[in-house]
Image 1: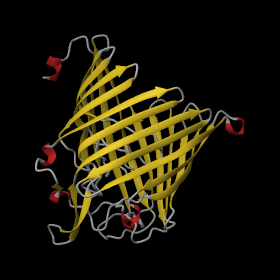
Image 2: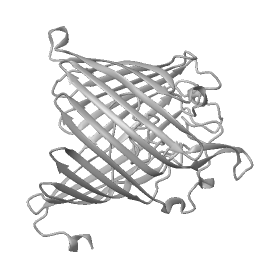
Image 3: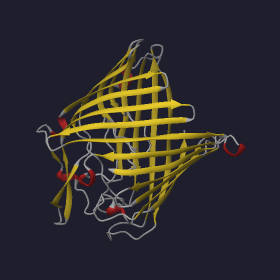
Image 4: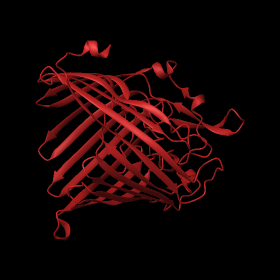
Length: 387
C-alpha cells in the first residue's frame, strides 16, 4: 500500500544500527527476582525517502530491544513513521515523530512532546514516537510550530524482574487517567523560537495529558503484592528556554510553570558550559559544565531534582573515531545525596561503535525518590554495528 502512495522517483536512503549490550550491577538486588547481570540485543533500521526536489519526504524508524532479564524491557516501538511537505515559509508533518525541546545538560524541563521510554535508560533521554500533525511557520520574526497530538503514549517502566525500578514496582496494567477519554484525549502544543544575535530563545505551551505520571500508593498486584499505580493528570505547561553564546561561554536556562487540578508550581534549570579549545596542545576540546536545578515544591516534589547542583566535564578528542567522554555528578544540596554519571563512545572503523556508561548512587536518604535505586550502581558496554 505504501509503495502505491510514493512516486517512482523517490530516492531512498537506508541506514540504522544493530547491537548487543552488557549491563553489570555492582551490588546484589533488593528483590531476589532481579538479576545481577543482563545481556540485551537492539536493532533500529531507518529509511528516508525524498522526492519532489526534496520538498516532500517520508521517514520510518522502527525500534526493537530484547532483554531476557526483564519482559517489560523486551519491547518494540515506532520511533518515526511520518510524511512531510515543505515550502519556503512553512513545513507540514504528519505521522509518528520525535520532537526534542531543551538545552540544559542535567535535565530537560521544557521537553514535553514525547513520552519517556524509561526501560531503555534511566536518564530519560530515550523517547517513544508520538502521533501528531505539526505545522511550522517560518518567518523573519522566528519559527512558530503548532502541534495536534492524537494518541497518548504511556510511560514504560521496568518489570518486577528488571532493575533500576521503584520498590514496590509500577503496575502499568492498572493505569488511571484524569480525562474520561484516557489514551484518546487530543493534546495540543505550540512553540515559538528565534535567534537574536548571540541569543537563542524559545517560548512554548503544552495542554493535555501530562507525560510524567503520579505514582499512587497503595495498589495491589495480581498476586497480592503491593504495587504503584500510574495516574496521568491533565496539565498545562508554559516553558522558556534561553541560550547565549559568548565566546567560549555557553549560558543556558530552562524554566517552566506547570498547572494541574492538584497543584501549580515553578521549576528551572540554569547554568553554563565553558569550552577550553585545544587543551594540552592537542586538537581536543574540554567543556566544563555547571548547573543548578530548582523546583518550587521543595521536599514535597516527587522528583529527585528540586535543590540540586550539577557539575561535569565533556571531553571531545576531535579525532577520526569521534571519541567523546561526559562525566558528571548531581548533588542534592539538602541531603548531600550524589548521583554519578559517565558516558563515553568511540568509533572503530567505518561501521562499529562502542558506547560505555556507568551510573552510581551515594548517600541517598529514604525520603529521596532515588532511594529505590541505592543498590543499582551499574556499568554498561554496548557494541553497535551501523549500516
